Image (cartoon, rainbow, N blue to C red):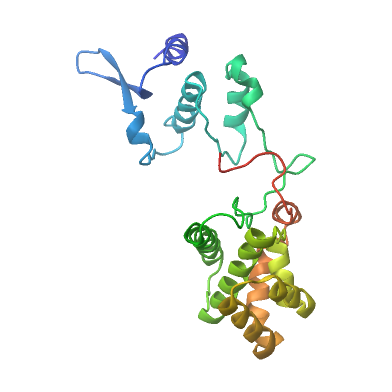
Length: 250
């Protein structure tokens, strides 16, 4: 498809419940648009292929179609090339909707991964579900980063993370991943977390960590947390108590 044809297709996609992802050519040489229904996109869509097959351009064109349709979305691109192309082509009427986050430019945007986006007024079930969602995702992240994930420090980290998220819900305490790391190395920080923890069972587990585990027993956990936070940029991002620019849930 010629660039001008692609542009026309994107500009005229408003109101359509499909997203165009490319074209295919029949044995007779006729070109036909290939699309996926938007209701199916909500169930996940995956594009695979070797370098140079057009995955990046497909991502760009999908994002531009969502822009034309006045939809909200997020683009994650480690190299930034897609972002630059998107910003050059996004419709003018969406300029005020843009939030641009670049961790390598000052000021660095902070994201508190322990921020629950809930308060103490919500039902207990909603609190529990949110805590478990945040904690399980973070534990999976650390497991992927570690070649040797022991049961003991996995349980310790899970307990500390649960307590931190709960305190953020109940007291808006502002605990961050850096604070959780400090609780492993500093007894005073851990005492404060215990004081901020409302759930009696969780408090009991924290007290056990404080009283029964030695520095040498906690050292493997400290090493893995250090591996994650030793990068200055990462440390700045995850050390922020509150979101810097946007509610990532909306």
